[in-house]
Image (cartoon, rainbow, N blue to C red; front, top):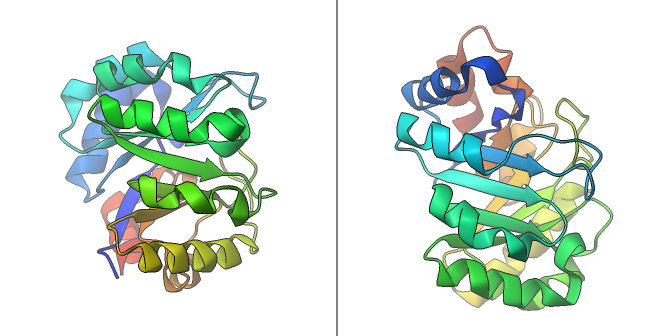
Length: 217
């Protein structure tokens, strides 16, 4: 089992103090900054884009995971790579049969690539391309807004994907995003996830270091 990494989602951060928030994550033991990009079309919310990424990049040495919840992500891959993303993850639902091409495009920029599936998308849809990925992200809520309740069926998906990863013999990270709490994180890790996205759980905590350590333990 790979080392567990905590990737707080800055969707739950204070947008007016984003540089400070990102520095706080690094200071308190986070491993990755999860950067949710929403366009108001693919999901019913609008967050932030390239300029915010460029502006926060100098504030942290942590890897930044740009999760593109947008239509036609291939149009923006090179720009997100240039703006400072270390991972770029794209949705099967946005790419469909072009998913492989988009993942190869991400790889060509020198950035780690990942496929994402929504709660209502079966694992079979991405099974063939998992060995191409550096990371696979399972959504345990419907994307769009932070603070939603965890959908337990995501655990079965994690187990199924973990099996495919193990058979591939490759070092592929398995990420979960949505509704992660102190109460369910043990089950999530037992199902195979090693990258844990937590937004409100970390940002609403009185002691961010303590909560990050609890989620890791």
